[in-house]
Image 1 (cartoon, rainbow, N blue to C red):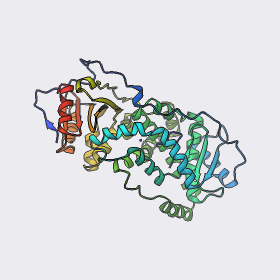
Image 2: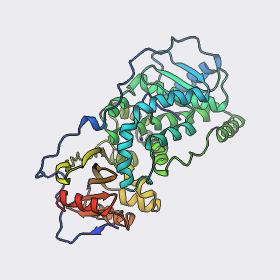
Image 3: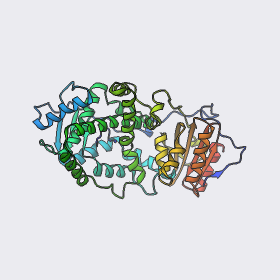
Length: 420
């Protein structure tokens, strides 16, 4: 598994009366929505673009894997790649540095409040620590988009599992040199979470696909079995501090990205995949439904800042685009996979804003859908999912607004501020 310089890698609602309408979020709002405050998503400054270690002659075993990956990916290295074998402790130290920048405690502390109110996380979750704990149990290598360096747990005489890791990261290096994976860093800096999730799925889907093609072409049955046994001993289940939603969100790019890449390859071969890096998918909807790529792009929604209408003590603490993938993983927590998939399908855009007042949190999520049927299915499912909690679901024309809160009084304050 891998990470670039950014460490990614990621409700009974009161049924309102039929006369209550939610204006479509694309319509003009009585109170023009404020632009996203930069302080909500400010991250520590990115590392200076220092060059990586000077390339040296690679050990024969690593050089062989590098040349073989060129063959299966159909690309050649434009500059030398520097794989650096490290210990688990050193990998974890460098991952923590990356995660501290990509998932800083300030942003994660505010975001966890919103996600707890929405039912994605259990009360008391430390989201920053959960990401750290997940990475420490699941990651054995990463590719650095700034230095072009590959870091992996292993040695200069790699085992079959270490070779698989190298094949994965070497694919990242090839994709980066030809198409520029630093796009992920730009999306992260702009807090474009939904588009970032889609782009990471493309990158990880490519790396996983060609890692596996390399293995089929260059590892024998005994080596494949050895790699499987090594993997069983190298990866542990995420610790209890990692809520299921966090684990699912961080692992989302791998299987879903691979399925997306497989669809592209079936559609037009490697040339189609290369074109996707030049014109990347912009939503997890496109990742989950490759037939919607590249034409079906989501609507941009702007949720109004209700801080002043909520009253004294309420402050805006978070804002995030919410895609089909995020909603499907949310529903997966309590519903069957088929129900979750059906309820999130037909998504055409989604954004929330969250406010806090002491220990209380209120969240307003606006969504739009391909049609009335999809909107109604989402609304009904959200009511089922959130049964017994402080949530309101408001229907509109092809749109659904969901109001979440940590308690009934906070929900009433949010309903009043939103004019529900």
